[in-house]
Length: 225
Length: 225
Image (tube, rainbow over all chains, first blue to last red; front, side):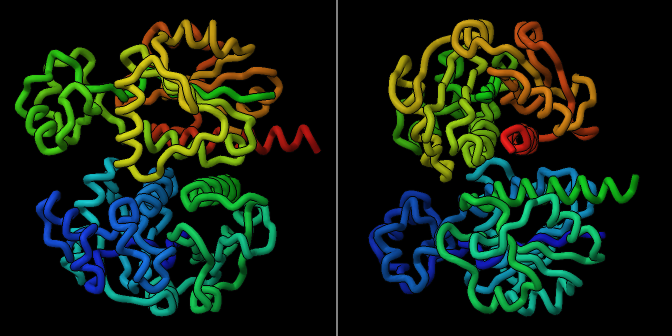
């Protein structure tokens, strides 16, 4: 079993052209001395400009993506090369995290890396970057034999039970939303074999990722014993 | 059972006076337009100046503290008011995180908050701030009936087994190091009843926190069923 983990529809993108001339973006660009279209969209700085964006409430949260990536890449499963991690963004770009990649723990370093990757897209390297929607990513790149989406809209399931099912597959794929509010798009939902909710509370993506991966590790360990 | 969780000897502090005139600190202060002694010490920016600091290799990693706090405060145990979180810093200051406090997920907002708290110390509010060493924090504030330190120097223990022990206590306290390298100071070690290691690999503080708290939740749930 090798686990695939996809952060779907993630709120990670460069400033979109339609708000490139807004005061919030121009002042951030001047302050940072970075081209205004080469800056990560971030609600902390660009809130006033984001009202105009389509699906704006799901966008501009690189901090959530960073926290989820740290949570995933800090696990023994990832460190042992037993999990592949993909970030699919709301703008239909995929960042494929190579084995052994160390995601910067400092947010400012992460921001610099993400801006570089998205500006240079498409790109080879430890983190590959290419345009792809969820359907293409799942059906052509990951090609899993089981797809489980984690969502508050799913059926209640304990992480242990889920992990038991996941580790029985050969190329399972877990999907968690990389956005702050709302639910998976219909296209993402159509790709899942099962939709599961692991807690009565809605939980942050990084918490869901930490718990499910931990249980998958334990289940996989149990199978090897 | 109410769990206490202490990030010990954490690498969170303002620029110490002895490096306040170093070029790295002065340029960061100018760029940010913040007084140089009211800036968080951060190895990402002040590396060149930090060689002179005592125990410098354990200091200046606010990113690690932030990741661990997000990991802890995103759990149902914290959200349900069943866990109290304390950050003890290497400079002997304690940040006591009040119930229901939402730690900013954006690092830049977290940095602003941490700088404000440390500048205004001592301070009341959702996050209380006061001077205290580990001994004072544990013996006078937390007053636990069981103290378990989590460390690569500990005896191998599974998180489940640990959680079983922890939930049998009334006021258990878990301690994880809030620093990047090295081990607990002797004073911290003397306060522990037990020192445990939860994985053969050394793991980040946020990963250890996520796993142990999750198992404590499960064990506590099992006792209530």
